[in-house]
Image (cartoon, rainbow, N blue to C red):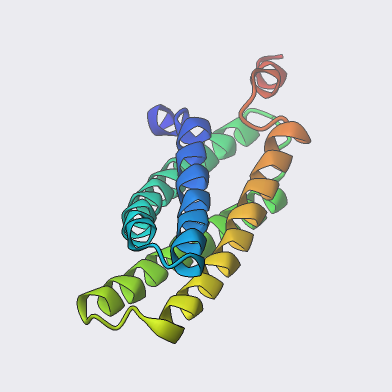
Length: 157
């Protein structure tokens, strides 16, 4: 359990970077009508969704570790953890659905015109979810010390 949890701080940065890069590539491809960027965006979206799956799985393990810490007397901000978790799940499912829709449109050769702009708008909305997930995760680390050596020392005392 703790094995996967320790990777959460590292894995989340891949999901954030990939999904943010996807939005940027989608915008460049749509606005400048560059097919290369649209194809790259599709691939990066797939990798970003896989990264988000890894981030959510390791995050769930980290939450279980936090529950064990609470049993040892640590003060864990589970309200903030739940907000972070909710945004992480929304982000994962949002981009997974976007990936499916985009893939179907590409395969049916309907990823043109208004559909490209609609996907771009949806991608930008998704960027908001990435931001909120990161904001809440950062609050857990920098405000509450969750996952840091300071929190571990607090438990051992």
